[in-house]
Image (cartoon, rainbow, N blue to C red):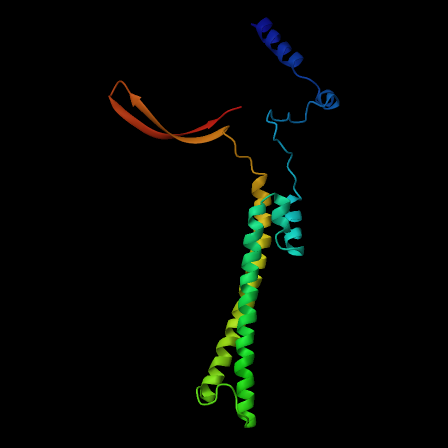
Length: 187
């Protein structure tokens, strides 16, 4: 019995290597996957993409290779700016008419719009200008967030090695079907 214990113990000790010897040979590094499109994890990619989008909208999307998102970003910003300019023009028109009316001059809305309605129109277009600014700023911030999240998700490993599938098993003894979920991990 002692001989069997000694034999097993000696086989275990000879099978172990010194960790320094393994590190010297460089065996502690993880082997690279077999796929050709493997890229190592870049922790600064999301920060770079967000920074580029903050500097110039759409530049972070170009950094991520999502060129189709650039026109969407500029269209959103353009729509917000267009509505700001349009509302500002209308606001100035009603404001100048109100000033003319207070000064006793004839304005372009004389006889059609009352003074109270001129004040209401000014408030309406002022509020719409502010909303246009908020929408434009929101689209700009959304552009930055999109570039950051997209850079994070590009580095996310999505392959078929890890799968979560429903499983049905027929029990031949009872004649019933068993349902369940199986988690498969392949090396």
